[in-house]
Image (cartoon, rainbow, N blue to C red; front, side, top):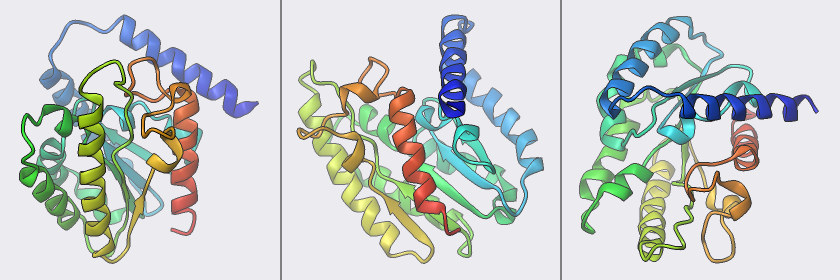
Length: 222
């Protein structure tokens, strides 16, 4: 009951923020979040687990699942954006480990089947994390654009990249790969209707609970 009350309050807050957000571009939001993160990271301790990602991470109620989770997600971010901002988080070296969930915005922006830049970014992101730190690398979540002709293509893109980042993670010490698709996708590989907020991309409270529980189970021995 306590979880249900907390997650409903968080969903209500997200809706309020969306409905009353001032008109601004992505860069201004990005810069504001970087400034906020700079202040937040000053409070990182050796028990902190840092969550890096895009809007899916930013919208995840970490306090609903993790006692020591620190949210460094930024809506609209990509592998390029994350790679660029990682050096700003000097206190990664103090933390217990990091969780990384990034990539769907890259796939939505790529106009061809050339994923070399994106793939290279993943490698550099992992290389930027100190070798003694635990890493949880999420698969790119499934989406549900089934009313769009783009759905079949995006599913293939997600599957291709996920296979690559899984192999990349397996090559690194202290890296765990989390395949969220097994739990969030339906039999056709689409994000389950009950798990998104109506746009086929962003998780609702039910989807976030599945994701949060998966992360909790993956990092329980850190």
